[in-house]
Length: 122
Image 1 (cartoon, rainbow, N blue to C red):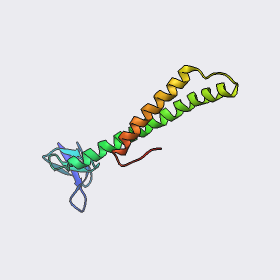
Image 2 (image 1 turned 90 degrees about the vertical axis):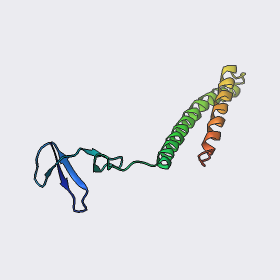
Image 3 (image 1 turned 120 degrees about the horizontal axis):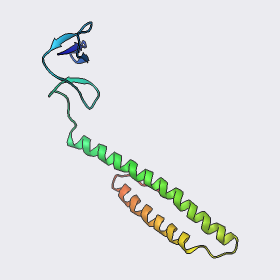
Image 4 (image 1 turned 135 degrees about the horizontal axis):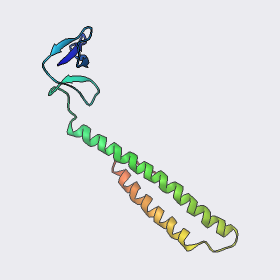
């Protein structure tokens, strides 16, 4: 059995498997919509394809920015190693040079993808 309490606007305010003050028994299932509100099953709002696409795009954008941040930190370590070697009058380690080039190529690819979202990252 399902018991619900309705708000003044007719929306479902609360739901339980037991009777509680202000509730009434109903013969339908109550579900929570993506907006966090309670609805009669089958009447909950659904996201449009545009909303879903926008959320997915925003999630990918956030992933790209996080990856760019990781690359920036890693490339800074390689750059410091190169500069430290040069400051000591030594030849930089080839692996550090290669890593720096690899990081820059990865970052450039991510920046290109980020431009598709209308966002530019330095």
